[in-house]
Image 1 (tube, rainbow, N blue to C red):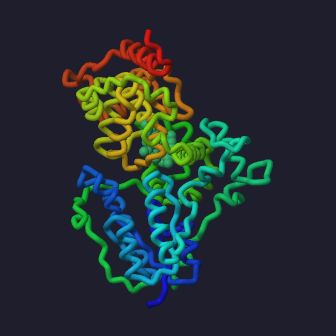
Image 2 (cartoon, helix red, strand yellow):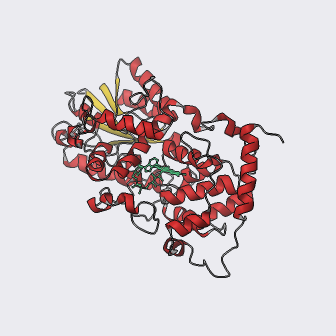
Length: 448
Ligand SMILES: Cc1cc2nc3c(=O)[nH]c(=O)nc-3n(C[C@H](O)[C@H](O)[C@H](O)COP(=O)(O)OP(=O)(O)OC[C@H]3O[C@@H](n4cnc5c(N)ncnc54)[C@H](O)[C@@H]3O)c2cc1C
């Protein structure tokens, strides 16, 4: 059989402007595109109609259809990656494997194991940057260390886009935002002789869910006004592209070029994404511990019943409840409300940020370990660039400022204002004082 190169899709589920796919298609062999439904990940999911699995499955079917139009096919396997790769080595004469880098701790271990396995057969795993604009060692302080504060990081990030230029150019001039037009190389370069069918959701023990996902495009108008609208959860003022950035169904380079041209505040949000990705890569302990170790001494109350009320959106604080119900119903929560709900759980209820982080990880369509962990540690005050612990959001004041007409609240909490709506489960002033005392005792080791 003719030798092939394998292109392995992971969190880059698109055919356009895909770095590793572009290089695979330029390598001079027919390309066999591969996706693995990874049992190490899927077996851990509790919800059999998990919306993310549905999204991936739909996307895979659509990628397969497009590849077919270009004379190729998508090989889709279901299993544990190392075992799947052992099978693939028996089934295909593989010249090389191409893939885009994934920076999460599990992904790094998986890729190291697969690279070692391939190396035993003399095959190289070629990996590329695609998921971020700058990787963890590309934006460093003058002393060569990773940044742990966003503002100086973002300044260096912006300067690095235009190396050697004193005045920033446009997105088109930046070597870091260049497209890799993989879509133009598909025809004539794909391997077609595959007969394996794509596993159905049922075959993987999942159920289809009725859900429509946000589009991959956003109007220029929305991005242009993003800085004015982004904080108001009742408005459609943010891009809702999170799920697409997460699974790579859009190109970060393309969106960053647009952001650079249209709205700096929006560009800054994309930089936050790179910032948290480099924090997780450079400080992997954050995946399980506080970035600042003294915060792991806080005596969390961790009251199970209170946690359940927070999850269900019945705390008696309407903006918190609206957020949790939006999350439970749609898999999305507005960023402002993520900050409010996370602050309420950690500071008002004194529940360990890891409980909230795990709940969001189960529910968010755009769940991303680096950004979710960064957001939670920020809210709890224990992370990089964190809000100081003594700044405790007042959920009522936040609602008055960001949902003054209660439009968002009424959309998600229709019984608000009736006798069916619960009274606040904690008094703000009392909870704030308790939070300050408990945090202080933990952080400062103050026993008095
Ligand atoms: C407690 C908490 C948990 C969070 N969990 C996640 C998560 O699991 N996945 C996730 O992608 N974002 C997370 N965020 C960040 C942010 O809330 C979401 O990215 C945003 O709400 C997604 O909606 P959007 O696509 O409309 O964003 P937009 O406001 O339109 O922003 C565009 C994109 O920029 C990126 N972005 C925006 N804000 C941030 C941020 N603060 N940190 C990192 N990237 C950002 C995202 O990729 C986002 O899609 C979290 C924030 C908090 C406070």
